[in-house]
Amino acid sequence: MRLDRQSDPIANGAEARYGAGMTPATAPVERPLLVPIAPAADGALARVGPDPAVLDAFGDVSVPLVAWQRPVDARASAALAAVARALPPVDETVPRLEAGAALLPAALRGLPGWDWLAADIDALVARFADATAATRLRFAFGAVLDDKCKRFHVDFVRARMVVTYTGPGTQWLDGPDAARFGPRGTQAGSCGHGVPPAAIRSATAGDVVWMRGVHGGGAAAVHRSPPLGESGVPRVVFTLSTAD
Image (cartoon, rainbow, N blue to C red; front, top):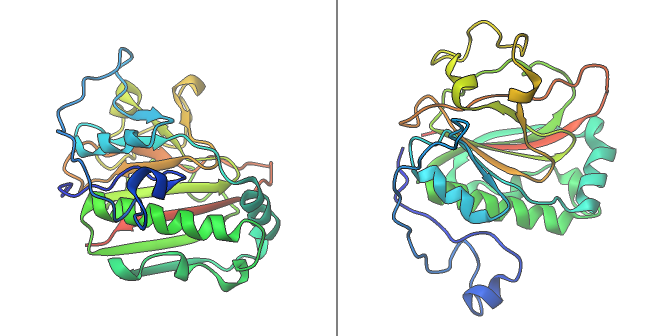
C-alpha cells in the first residue's frame, strides 16, 4: 500500500492549531518515522485509541486495523436514526477530488447536525485519501437494515474506512482470533459461531475505523457488521474504499 503522504489529525479548532486559513487537510505535515509496531501482550495487532494520531499506525503494514475512538455529534446521530429507513443509499466510485459531502443524499441537507456531518465527511475523506494516496475512491453512505454482512470476512481492496454515525459499530477479530481465518476470511466460524464473545472487538458510533484489505500489502482485517438480529436498530454507515 502506498502510504507516503499523511495529513495532520482532524480536530476542532483547526485554525488555532494550524494557523489562520489552514485546515487539517492543508496544514504542513510533520511525517512521523513509521517503524514496525510490536504486538500487544495479548497478541493484538490492531491499534485503538482516543487520539487521532492512532491513525498514523496504519502506515505499518503489520497493523491490520486502526480505530480512532471519538464521540459522534448527538444531533446528527439522532437525525440520521430518524430518517434511516427512508434514506436513499449512495454508492459512487469517483476520482479522489470528487469524493466528499457533496455526494450525500440531498434529503440530509438542513437536518439537525448537517453542518457537522458534512464537515466531518469532507475532513475524513481528505485524511484517508492522503494517507492511502488513492486516486479513485468508492464512496458509500446509507442505512444497514439487515444482517447480510454479519459473517466475518476480509475486503478485497487496499484499504477501507468505516464510520458508523448511528447504531452499533463495526466488529473485528484480532491477533490469534483473526489468525484462524484464511486469507479469504471464510473459514469455519465466520458467522461468529464458535468465536468467544470476548474475542469480538467492537467500535461504537462515531469511531473512525481504517481496515487493511487483501491488496493492502499486509495482514487484512477480519471484520463484520454487527448482527442486528431482532433488535431492529438501524445503522447509518459511511464507508470509503480505495478503488485504484
